Amino acid sequence: MAAGILFFIGLLVLVCLFLRRAQMIETLEHQGVTVVARVTRVEQHAVFTKVTAYWQHPQTQQVYPFHSWIVFNPLPLQPGSRVCFLVDRANPQRYYMKA
Image 1 (cartoon, rainbow, N blue to C red):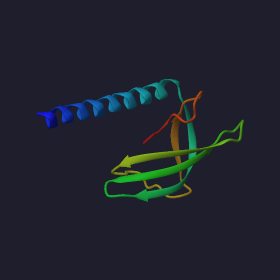
Image 2 (cartoon, rainbow, N blue to C red):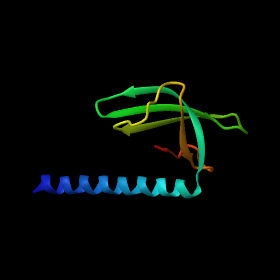
Image 3 (cartoon, rainbow, N blue to C red):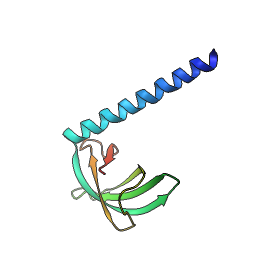
């Protein structure tokens, strides 16, 4: 019985995290700005690809690192290539890589 309750709570937490992420992406699509970042690292894992890219803000010259996990990577990403990210203007730590 306790295992069933723990499973349900875990499932509920995962659903909440998914919905929160979906809401953030929707907000970025309406209020964010698209930036082009340069890929510095591509790490292949079983089904996932981890992409690390950097973007430099043109006015402040501050460099922001972006990390994104892609499932079944359809993009031919390599270090040096460019990718688009949606970034929150007020908080560049909130971002989403456009596929």
